Amino acid sequence: MTLEEAMRNRHTVRRYTDRKLPQEILEQLQRRIQKNNQEYGLTMNLVTENTEAFGPALRLFLAKGVRNYAVLAGKDEPGLEERLGYCGADLMLFAQTLGLNSWWVGGTYRRKGLRKNAAPCAEKLLGLIALGYGAVQGTPHRSKAPEEIAQYDGPPPEWFSKGVEAVLLAPTALNKQAFTLRGEGRSVLMTCDNGVFSGVDLGIGKYHFELGAGRENFDWA
Image 1 (tube, rainbow, N blue to C red):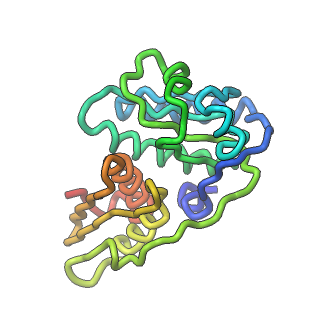
Image 2 (cartoon, rainbow, N blue to C red):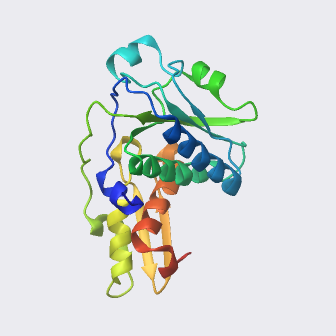
């Protein structure tokens, strides 16, 4: 499965089976996380066979079976939220190519438990990504129409339309899809107005747009 195929097949899954992740899968996830940490100055880490990031009630009713997750963390500095959104999106789609399901958890987690399992050098935590074999495969979320979030100066080229389509497949906080895209020539400006989640959602959206449009076809404004 390619990343593009994973983008279309991935849906939020909150309940997981007790099937353990094979060592080969764990190693591939570790390498992907380390690669993103090095390239983007992050301190994400993978936690396995651990339930401390969720309280008993959440484990019973909402986060059932979640025992593996990536801690989203980095140095407390400007731009961290967008970089974690971008790299988190990459990790979720990469996990999908490995046959795993995922869930971006931005608020309903136990902060003390997450901090305990974060990397020692992690300064700021923004949540986690649950990973595993889903009890279900999830369902598509409701999406806005492309014209609700995007405008292009003149007839839009195919790469722009594909990029917008990919953005609408991206997970966002509360499914608000609060994106705005403006294209002119090779230049694309993307913003997101989703309150405290804007930075993370912008990073997720940019990753999806690049995957759909092809990074070689445009420049970020």
